[in-house]
Length: 485
Image 1 (cartoon, helix red, strand yellow):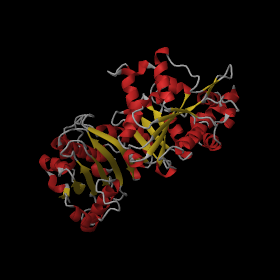
Image 2 (tube, helix red, strand yellow; image 1 turned 180 degrees about the horizontal axis):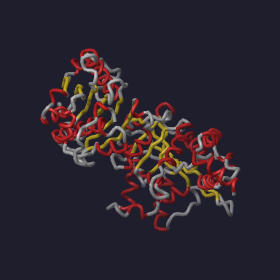
Image 3 (cartoon, one colour; image 1 turned 135 degrees about the horizontal axis):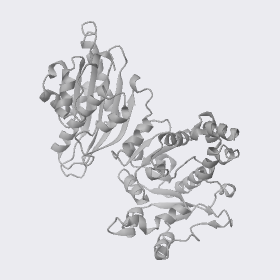
Image 4 (tube, helix red, strand yellow; image 1 turned 180 degrees about the vertical axis):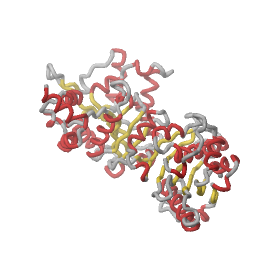
């Protein structure tokens, strides 16, 4: 820990918000600004009330008027204010002012910070609960470059005053964690909910950057958000950065493929290519206004007990290398996936899946918790223009091909299945590659685990190359062990 913040007496395990603010205030080196737009000066108020704030708070402001805010931070291209771009401009502008106005020669040990948020709380009609961006840019050593933590939140409370209070608590937790828990980002993440219930606030995007977070993989931090119940789903782009789901999905047609992708095989990519062709042939669907999502559920990640984070990162790297956008979710049932997408888009949706997945959808046991049972789930699943693109299944023993025409569902579900089939909600993928139907991810993974040869041709060439070069799924260790045997 840097000498500039050593010596502070450790507080109890979960200190109060006042204690956290006071600890920051009593550290003579921590010094910075608060810029809060949209919900009042809720965070800085906690520091004023804690006492001893004169040595910590350089400035606190709320540029509420849009023209005044534009005059300070500039005009956004999209004319929106509750955006990540706005947050970044606020943080950059305020840090620049501190450095211009405070002499390093006079204050060699000061740890500058800029805390900012730009939010929209619940509207008067209470139909839109609101959301916002919150962030801090800060130093933990005066001769070191700045670190940054930024996150996107969604309010769940139905009262603006409660939302303001929650935002203020979150802000204190963030600043406190940034200075005293930066060496363990996973714990820092959990501490953001100190004195906040998950029913009050959702965090669906978070990014760490700067010298203290060089080894932090933001995709892994995304996994923690879902794993800790802080959000139902997170997304990251092919370049490995976490992205806001609303930004990716807003007013887009959506095609989703669910799987374990452990590893991603030629079958997965054939399903992707063929279903995409069918989806683009639908009315009002084009490549320009469509987002394709590869989804991994935590139920799949927990297939072998506790989530193996190394295993998760291996899958993520492979999918990203193939240029795909990845979503990690808590959704076991498909109808919940569709409900989630429907929050952001009213456009057309498609689900690409194999025969076994479709048979599972018609299994009543997954819907016993719903008062309306399977009919309620199907009302949510097929309520709009959703269509299932079905990839065939080949019986390894008989060679029989199963499609939507001959698949078997439970006798009680037969008529329900016929209803959706005959109404065009299930469409077979017919131009599939018959030469790859014998490829199964679990068998490929077993071959890699056993150090066997021959799995390479079952995967996309780039995937095979990455597994070998980056030792994914413990490829090298497994091969060496097999050779010794």
